[in-house]
Length: 339
Image 1 (spheres, rainbow, N blue to C red):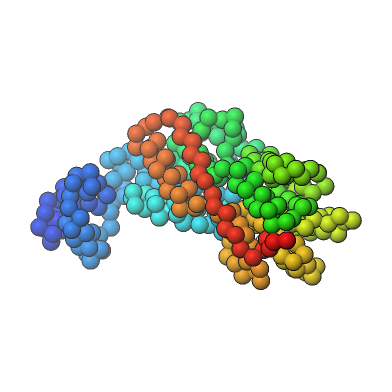
Image 2 (spheres, one colour):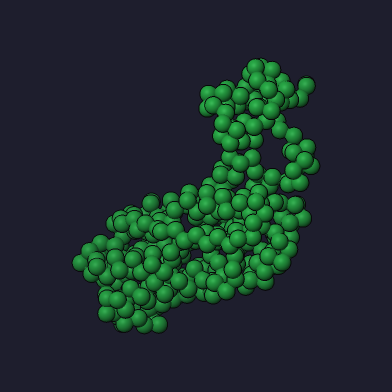
């Protein structure tokens, strides 16, 4: 079967091959090609089952037209949705995405970086793991374009896309206080990563702003590698003591889901006995008998910004650092109640 060429599409459309090339490489707006003509060319390309020659394009441009994406855990709904958004956005610019999960493991993160760099990706979008600072510095030394998402290292000047974690956490905890809760516990990951530290800081800020003393006994931390048992211990310590918590703020959706599964076995009613709020959303939280109030991160905006900033580095050869901090939204549902 004869491979369809740009010339075949141009002949059927009655235009030049150059015009077809502009449209199929998404340069039609820059070339001021009319929307109707661009649509016609794309429809003909689809009808003829046109397949671009990526090898020829790569040789001509010196690029692979591939982006490497490393997330913490692709099974987490937040990262799964981020990955899909990045993949869709990259496709608009004729880029493919190869992705993998670090599982919050610094060695696996390094292995993924090595694999992707050896695959000659044009750039990387990375959710950094705890202790991966040296990996980021090495990318800078090698002049490999990259953007960090979700987290960053304050001591390293690198491009990143993140949300206002501290303010968002403070707003969530303030909502619990305004709903009449007085002994508010928090469950976070045991990590030095900046975004979790900021969420803990926001929790403490809100307590202080409302004249509530922050106590270490109400702040619990779980290890990523021992999540189930650590969550159970944290919940037991928060709820079974002499002065049990009347609310819990979970630092992530994965912590909330695991925590709610255990809370449900204890016969504790939400929100009557205990109010719950979490950072990040997830379909499992929608199915809970008292839909959980959560801090919504703008996934679409984060993904689009990450691709845009990375492509600016790749196409313009710029080393300018771009730091973008995006606002979140508190989605109030039934799990907080009011007193």
